[in-house]
Length: 238
Length: 361
Image (cartoon, rainbow over all chains, first blue to last red; front, side):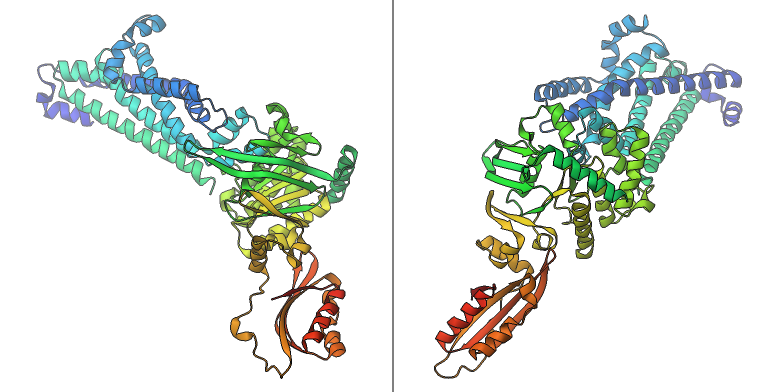
């Protein structure tokens, strides 16, 4: 209704081209779903790789359960290198890899490769921070009961850090919403592509506006969801 | 019922393995912490033996090395030198996997409880059984037994965040006992608790020791803890064991300054200056200020009264109390004896004959 009202009253917003309401709805909803799809899958894949890396970063530290200083140092450096590459450069750098995995580098599926890879080191650091919050006493208690490293990771570290880990997932997803829009500019699909092709290149300011509104709602939604789940995990314990 | 059967089981088990009395033997244990700038000596050639079934206390000021010592016993700290035997097995020589199995037989409780906040009381007690891969049905039954033992059956579904300190430590104790350990290590387990709660936890430890015949090794900086539950005690100072023995003999006859200061923290023997020499001393007579300690049955006999009658001296009582060291009455009197010098010596000899410890102040 809002869009229809704008269409009738402010035709200037659409610049040179006239746009039909039904076309707009179809385009926007498709792009929204593409963005959600990209972000959800990329976040999930980033955790599949980033979570173990984060665990390794923490547990290989000096004095920790799997102390291994060379591994810890090397991993830390690699993660820092990847984190210092700006995403827009990273997008271009991984094109050969994307082609290898997906077969092309345009579209939703193709953009999941750079999105996931860019998020992995970020996730690893977030997980590391969450796990470091856990008191050493809990690990010591588990060790005193004869727990092995795997048991300590799966039964102590991860469950105890769960509220903080959940917040980390929300932060990652929110970052990926932003990154996905950036990927959209180079043909990644989703709201980014929509905003760029129609909103920018064809001067359809309304499309740009709607895209921004949807992104804001999406980010808010993810944050609220993350906060709620984390709060629930904490509340249960009190 | 459960306690009785468990106790039998434990006894049979302990009997079968070893006849020698020592359950834990610590030999020439040295621990040096290496920091980038310096070496810190935490334990210096400690040799110690803990008997089966006793409650052994290690007391020391913070930084004395007691925490390191107890952590070496289950290898949470790796000794720099020396060896430790628990129930005949050399803990310090075990491979990782064997060590993990052996740790399941050494329970440990902590000052800050170290319960998992993401698990209920029930699941916290279940935790060591999961680690030991005890079949689920059996493990659940065991958790209920343990919660009953520590008096927390009604809190099974509660999270640790909702418990008081004393209740948290009870969960800690239940958890430490889950795999039927031979030894219970207590790392300042009552230091974060108020005096009443401390007493109730100490009583629980005493019950566990008696009924399940579990050897307890505890470290503390609080002489009250030693006084209430320990059979034997070692005093650690500056990374070394400076005194070791029966708690009662330590109380009545401490040989080091540090031991005396620990005892003074629970048994008051410092008499205010203005109370001394208040009596008028007749000409030709002298006074002696003495501290008399009574242990056990002599605390109930009228020895002082018979001394006064026998030697005809005057006695001024400056201070007196009767306390308990574990379960034995332990009394302290500070007396001012007034009389002829020779008679006073005889009177004191009389008291010594009757088995009282006398210290001239």
